[in-house]
Amino acid sequence: MLSGLRTERLCMIPWTEALVRAVVDAPASLQRIKGITVADGFPNHPVRHFVLPATLAAIEKDPSYGRWSGLVVHSQDRRVIGSMGCKSPPDDQGLVEIGYDIVPAYQHQGYATEIGRAFVDWLQNETSVRRIAAECLADNVASIRVLEKTGFNRIEERESMTYWELPTHK
Image 1 (cartoon, rainbow, N blue to C red):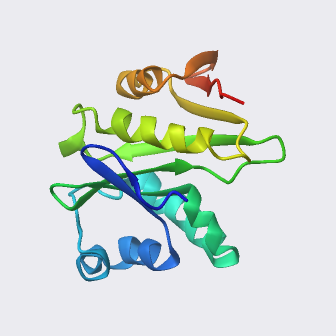
Image 2: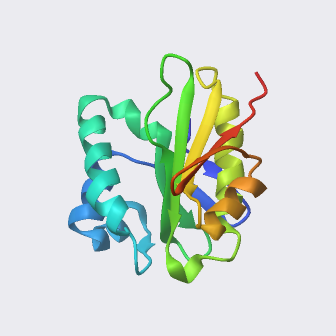
Image 3: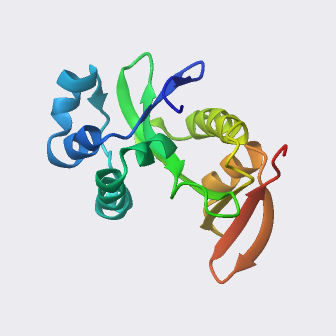
């Protein structure tokens, strides 16, 4: 289970219906629910308007969907600083695509790489995962560095996007 994924400075809390609703409707309620606060800038526009509604709809149909993504929490600050996860559970070929975001105040400190490595290790131990992919804008230098440091290989560039894949150990 994703629950309990921890690194030196971070932990990941899997999405539940209650957590998604709290982040969307009343982020301050996370203090009561999980004993954590939310950093300024979370959730960003794409997460709030695209990722969270899709996550909520999927969890309402199948609560186990939340195990594939979650909140990134700074352990010492007890603050949500971003999110990371798979855009969906593994498909029939075992493919997952990851995405992530870290709020501006916590960027450029290695947090995305740190939790990314732990998350990828977790995915590689999941028997249903055979391929791990990612994509980012071709000019997003910070995201490119995270993917490179996490072990992804650049496989294609089309228009303004760069596509990545991580070799698995299976």
